[in-house]
Length: 212
Picture 1 (spheres, helix red, strand yellow):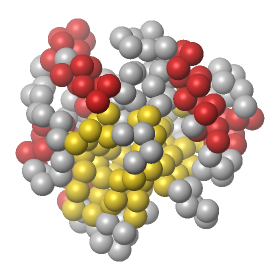
Picture 2 (tube, one colour):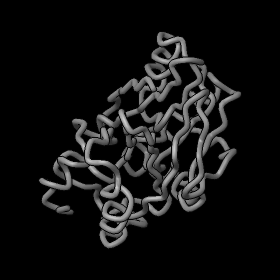
Picture 3 (cartoon, rainbow, N blue to C red):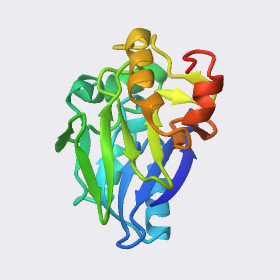
């Protein structure tokens, strides 16, 4: 699976393109600010988006959804049902930070814990990992040689997602990390929503907030 990582916008949030090498089909994960840069990257990589996926609906991860939907109308917008209130309040989030209100396009597919999302000849496992936000999900590529987890704002290199925003809970976040992420192979490549990449083994050994 090809992974294209883009750190964009005033919060340096990461949009991730997850592409099947054989078919060029791709998931666009968390298109936040600078959607034109995301669209340009998709076209530069010659990808065909088949899903627009939100790990969660905070402004820095979802502001550009409408622009991506206009550019790639055949790709359905997907998120967990518990994230809908946050997503539908994107204009309110934008106003609170002094940004223009984005258009809110309807979610077309609700993601469920444990389902498999096909991307060409590849597949991604969806796991519900609340704590940073109520409907946060992570996307996992279960591969014995190159395991991968796109974790949004659940886990960072040496840190964890904040829990003081609406719907946050450190108890839930810790449970998500321990019961979902820390059960992945230590070699799993972790692509977070902000900051450098890490691995599950590194975080289990060194993360000061949720030690393994």
